[in-house]
Image (tube, rainbow, N blue to C red):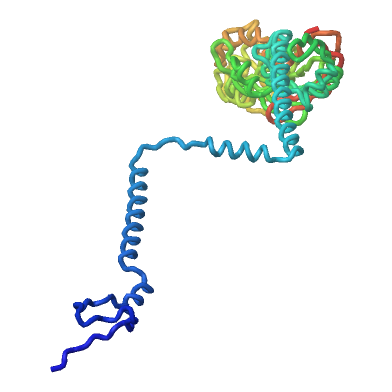
Length: 427
């Protein structure tokens, strides 16, 4: 049997010739599979790389979980601030100048507004003291900038609103005025000593709500009617009786600073029995209403009480013979009292005059003698004073002048225009 022979990788040289006496030693042979393996990537290296990548992802995940579990801390902006400073440092010179000017302008505006508020506060306090007001007025100085006006010591326009100004028996709801060409006195906004108003225009409001409250002792309400009339309606207590009061007032100027009310058609109703009009004219005084006169004519006892007084019978125009027959016979009484002329004649009787000589007669007519006495004391001047809406504007300080321009009646009250010049404050 043939023994297998080995193929040599390379033929031996002459010097490497095998001796028959040397033992056989296998020499290193070149393996072609090793060359192919060297060309392919090492699978162990890929496994190690994948393991290291998984470890890195796992570490990142653990770091994220640690950050989520850690307590919140404020962010560090130092690096960002340095970046912003670096950006600002990188701006061109023109941009830096614009930013600096904007900041300076903002500070100047703040200073100007502060000086304005201070000057308005000081002016309000001076007005409150000089006008003896219960509250400081509202002062608004117009124009911008304010400091340039202070340096010039002249203000373009100042608006002043004063609430609740006392004027005689009533209070003015609001006095608003706009002053122009105002000259200031003082060295600056913090040392103002006074001002002189070159020209002023304003408006005064006398509110009906204030009138109804301040004159409410008489339970009278005032309402506007037309451009110059005011109606007064309500009740007036007289000798323990609440009498219905009606009056019309015409509003007009009274001199340069006053407003007057001409009250007419004043009337007090004693139920539906009688009407009182203060005054000395024939139509004024205490008279029976038409309802009251018809009631007297229908009540035979009251009619006989009137005819039994010869003076009253003569005023009624009833002849003496007819009076005697009427007092004896109800039929003749009905003839006298049933005529329309009798009712009209009874309405013309002034019961105040009747009460002077025959107080018991009025009581038989159903009228309280105490009420008649109270009405007799309630003369026209007294009633006019209780319903008067007249007032006069307070005198302003300084040597200037102020006067009323016009008076109108509106839904909310009486409005009066005001104008003045050369008015000084704090000087």
